[in-house]
Amino acid sequence: MAPTPIRTCVLGVGLAGLTFHIPFILALPDLFTLTAVLERNPSSPGGKLQERFGISVRIHRTLHGVLEDPDVDLVVVGTPSATHYQFAKLALLAGKHVLVDKPVTATSEEAKELGELAKSKRLVLYPFQNRRWDSDFLALRRLLSAPPHSPQSLGDLVELESHFDRYRPALKGTWKDEAGPASGQTYDLGSHLIDQALVLFGRPKSVTAFIENARNIGDPLVDDNFTIFLQYPAGTVSPHPFTVILRAHILSVCSRQLRYKVRGSGGTFVKYGLDMQEDQLKVLSEPNGIHAAEFGAEPVEMWGTLESLIDGSVVKSKWPSLERGGYINLFRNLAAVILDGAEQDVKWGESVSVIEIVELAHQSSKGKRTLRYSSYLTIKKHIM
Image (cartoon, rainbow, N blue to C red):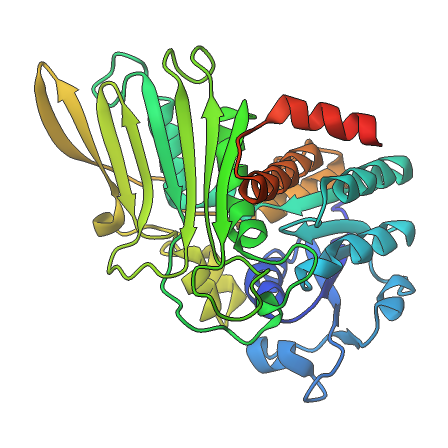
């Protein structure tokens, strides 16, 4: 007998809810049923969900209504970042499984508390780190796993740059422009870049960061630009000292934004442009379109370029993004965890590490110094 689809309520019908969560829930009817949404002030009887997808579900106007709803098994927290901790905690206390958008919390202590709470109540708590399923990130992982002496090998790694740049000279006029817990680009875009770096290389030895409000508009406490250096000593990632540079610049005027640049003793890999899925999801009106062959597939002109040193000469070639981007795989895994007890592809403890590095980055920038990861964890342990 097939398991009953997971009855799901999405908190928030803004960009996160309508773009990154609801389309995948609707595209997997055997695994999920969208039973409700939280929309505090719907402008029409069917709310934004009906306006976007022509579908009507129960609309809760208060979080209390969601928590008291017996037809909700899973709560998806897609509300402003400052609410993630409180809403996730209340949902867990109400006996609901929880998927939390990034950044999962404002502090690592909040994230650890939620993890312990979920464990004590035997509930699934899943962090939404969807960009592990970007097409170009999957291609990068495949490149970095190439055999050491193959023509595709970069040799001994020296440095990786990972960018999420854009040109946005004005404020958006949303909650993201407001100061508060988990505000700013380091929490927002940094959560993606840090998570990818941790997947590839694990925890760094030290963190050095430069964080600022580069546009000098809006609240000065809301950063819109960061550069974070993650340092790995020789003998960990590579025989050489290895550095990961994470960058998000809000004033990058460029027709092709740099995404990755990886330098090694035997070659260099360069990739421009972001994964296609976000742009495709923003205009998606039929959730089944997620299953189309072109969804998440990166066109050839966006593939990265590999320059390899072969027999003393530099040979240039394309490195194909063979794997389609697949945010839907996060939802498939989430369902398998809830229904079958499968292992989480994105573990909650990994999201705790992301927030720890975000905290370290802010402290490093404020104190204008490099901070060791191990010392930071020891200090926090003694403070508690």
